[in-house]
Image 1 (cartoon, rainbow, N blue to C red):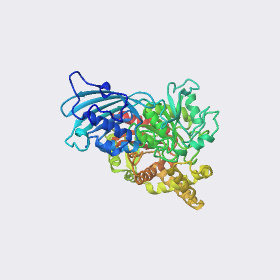
Image 2 (tube, rainbow, N blue to C red):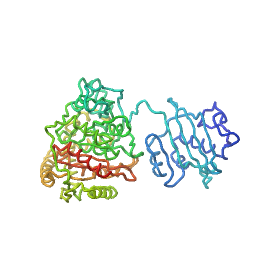
Image 3 (cartoon, one colour):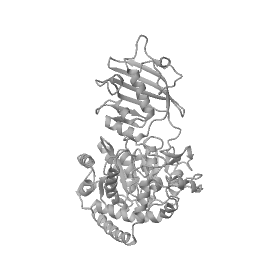
Length: 540
C-alpha cells in the first residue's frame, strides 16, 4: 500500500493529504503511514493478535488513557483482550513529527460514530522486524483521549447534578454520594444490578435510612451506582451492565459488590460511596482501588430501605478517598452513644490470616507493620491464635448461602436466565445447603465467635484487607475462585464476630494497591478511623 492510498480505516471521501500535516519541507518516514493505517484497521476489526504485533515488546512499552497507565506489553495485551473492541471512528487529522530516521511522534484526531472527538498520541519506532508490520514500525508509547461519556453505564445506573439534593445543612455539606443500587432513593427504583428486577420494581418514595442519614448531614446524592447482581459477589463484575473500571489498577477487576460506588469515588465522580458489606463488599473494592473503607459494627446502622442478601451479615458501609471524609460519613450515620474508645497502641496479628494471602501481600504488609512499629505507634504488638481461614470460610459460606437462598431463591426460580452465570451458580449452590448443614455451621459460628472474642479482647487485629491485589479482568475462573475463597477466609473474621473492620490504603505493589485492615471491638468504629489516621500521620 502506498503512502497516499485510500484505506478502509479512514473516510473514503477524505484524501490522506488533506488530513496529514507535517512541518514544511518534511515527509513522513517511509511506510510509517502504512503502519498507522494498518493499526487503525486492526483496531476497528478488533484483531487482537495483529494489534499486539503493532506494539513493541518488553516491559517498557506504555499505553495510557483516562482510566490509568499500563506499563509493559503483557499488561497492554491483557487489557486489549478484555476490552471487547473500540468504537467505530473516522480519523480527521494526523500530525506527524519525525524525530529521527527510526522514531516519529504521531498525533491523530478522530470523530467516533457516536459523536464527540477523540485524540490519540503515539510514539512510533522502526524495529528490525519488517515482516510483522509495514516497515517494521511499532508503537512504544500511546495515549488515548476518548470523548467523555455523558454517563458511564458500567459505573452508574442513574446520574444527576445532583440526583437528590441535601435535606439540610450539616457537616457533610458539599459532599456527593454514590449510592449502591440496593438502597431506596426517592423518585427511583432499586435495580440490584439485575435488569429484570429493575423492570418490576416500584418507584421509591422515601430514602433508605442509610441514605437519609447522609442527606440529613448535608450531603447530596450524585447518582445510583452499579453493583454485582444482588450484591452476591466480591469481584465487581456485572454481566448485564459491564464491569466498572479500576482507576488504581487499569486492566484489573474493581472489587465488589460495591463496585460502582468504589469506582465513582476513586475516579473523583463522588466523594463518598455508600455500599453494603456482607462478605467484604466494602473492604474488597477499597483494597483493590486504594480507598478507605469501613464495614461498621453489625447492626449499628439501619438497613431499612435496603435489599437484603444475608441479614446476619449485611451492613451498610462507606468508601472515601481519605480518612477524614470517611470519618465524617460514618459519624453522620452512627449513634454516638453506641461508640466507644479503645487503646490506640495495642495490636495483635494472626500468622494464619497473613499466610492465606499471596506472598507479595503478606511480605508487603509485614513491612508496613514493621514501619509502624519503628515509628512507635505500638506499645504492644503480639501474636494471637485464630481459627484457620479455611474453617472461617466454610462457616461463612454455609451460613451466608442459606440466608441468601431464603432472601432470593423464589425470585430467581421465577426468572430463569435473569442472572449472570456466576451469580446463578452461586444461588444454585445456596439452595443445596440443607437445614442440618446450616445448623452445624451456625453452631461452629458461635464457637468461632467466642474464640475470636476471647483472643482479641479490646486489642486491634491487623490483617490483610484482601488476599491479593486486584486480579486481572481476564484472570481464569480458577484464579478468581482461589482469590475469592482466600479473601473470604480473611474477611469472615469481622462477619462472624460482628466487629467493625477498616481498610486503609497503606501498600502499593506492582499489581496495584492493597489495604491493611484493622478489626476492633464492637462499637469502636470511629475510634478505628481516628487511630488509623494517627498511624498514617506517623508514617509521613
